[in-house]
Length: 431
Image 1 (cartoon, rainbow, N blue to C red):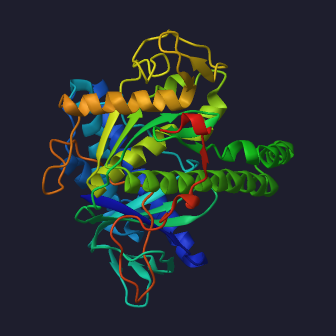
Image 2: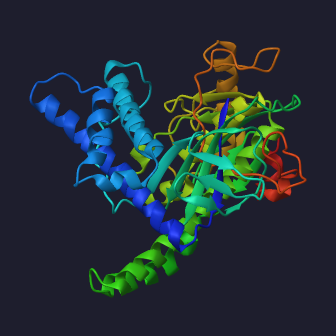
């Protein structure tokens, strides 16, 4: 399976200038090739092939006065930009024809130098790992990198990224074998919410950290300072960078929390079942800020790919399943309830339920039924998933130990529950 490992890079002033030029050249090649295909489509001409675009917009463009500066960067960067455009078109066409599952993919669009994320992609011909801990990138030089974990295998590609607050990251994709964990005896149904981030079917609650809400006061002050600066001035650029850094801090904390919580759940549970929430729809309601602050989609994606990586079973319960209406003790459907009702009594058996804990138990029962019916994949005797769709390399995978430390299978850390803030339910609700 493919995994992505991210590391923070610290280029010097000259290297930042060269990287900015490489970002610009890759963007120009993307826009030129996209424009040619759009114009050919509007004129009713055949689809322009990649070979023709490579000849016109890379090889011949370097010999012209207008695009002579394309020769200042590695040719691999330009070719990979064209391959990325081909992949974007392929995803768009597959989405139209139904070959690609999930939400419809929009056609490729032009890139701007004002985009918050600038990146270039390289294959093994244009970068190498050095013995002194640096990474050599063609026509850029040796980049200083902070290694947090050793790479488990030789990388097959590298993406150099600059985010909105000026940080640089190196993202390696490696092919590695799944790290199958010892079989666990428990299974977990998870109910995601806002008052508590997640409630497990065994009675544990994961408190909602609300990272954006906690940083809101400072963000408002920084945003006011930004709005008072003159457009186009250096002071406005500095204020914009301060706002971007604060947002990046919030996103990093949320991602770290998601990784720790998802890793703990995957380590402790042989099977994990979650509800397939309509996050995009909830993001258009009055609860939008809290929904996006929770980051349910990112959390469930982490659970899914970590289940594949560690040989666990993962299944999604349909969003229309009435988990909050059914009594988990007797199975009687007691009808819908408004959100302010947090506890209720079953009108048939008289059991008093906590709303979230009852929903988590129902998600567990429904997930088991889905797996038993063969609608979800489970690992075979060798630990490999049966019939599972491929999972792409995740951006959030973090990096490598220092020299002398061996790589660990899976994601280390979180050896005990105290690493994640769990708040137990009332004693009479424990199972």
